[in-house]
Length: 328
Ligand SMILES: NC(=O)c1ccc[n+]([C@@H]2O[C@H](COP(=O)([O-])OP(=O)(O)OC[C@H]3O[C@@H](n4cnc5c(N)ncnc54)[C@H](OP(=O)(O)O)[C@@H]3O)[C@@H](O)[C@H]2O)c1
Image (tube, rainbow, N blue to C red):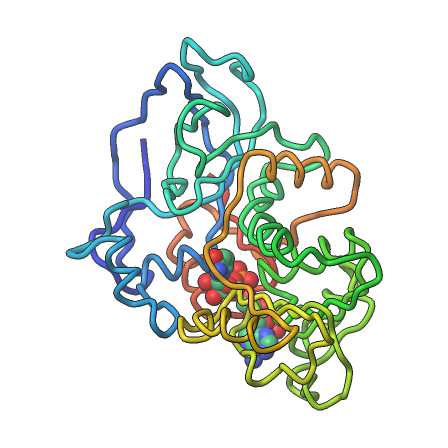
């Protein structure tokens, strides 16, 4: 099969289209013929090793000391099941599915094996595609969605609470706005001028243009602040947090995350950081929300498989709107 591989960390140009062995499903695995995948901010970080301050050594240890341990990027996919292992019970050949492989990656290819639930790794999963989404939208259901869900599980936004999302137009931000709205919160999105309408259209009650207004100076207080842009550390926005408020550090430095215990001990406010945790039930939840019309991945640009390097260049710029999809 064809796949984009890389053997050294660096810019989009390190990627090369190669012929690699087609995977063979194990007893509890399905083989997915990939129809669409995405390029996420995660792919950019893993490929380039550009990570937030303090995470350099940890990332190197996790991703590979002398070069990439996993040579194929891509954490999201959608497609059809081409073959099933002999013990698989939940899926059949031909089923339309979407999947998420988290840090295991491997989706920038024509095929990927994924384990059936309950049989193997919990950090990669596959679920039936919502009928009302095409393959391109379904491929973009998981990265932003599972990240936002993971942080909201810890922050528990309540109905009527005020949630502010910084970076509301990005992959995680567009998911966070829609999910916070679904949980009954009143949502304010922070983004640049060109994205104000988009953020409003996905359900934000209010929008703030960060090129014109500094939300920390308005006197407004929020119960939850989601920082997906790394521009709202606790020191900057503690005055904008209500009593009992939580700041969700989706993007922040290691020192920022390490402040969490001290802040919890010395105030009613909390810093919530750490690794995203998710499971197949999150994929099913996102699919059910999509089916009910409460959640829809925002698609920025669509690329062909031949344009993969171009897609990475666009993501590297750090200003995509929602998700970047590559059809395979
Ligand atoms: N902690 C975790 O486990 C975890 C999980 C997933 C993602 N992440 C990280 O979270 C970050 C966001 O991911 P993503 O997928 O949402 O990335 P993305 O799609 O590239 O979005 C980044 C967003 O940041 C906005 N932005 C840039 N500068 C800004 C500023 N000064 N003020 C406010 N917004 C600004 C951009 O909006 P404009 O174009 O309007 O400027 C863009 O929408 C990435 O760095 C990723 O590595 C962490």
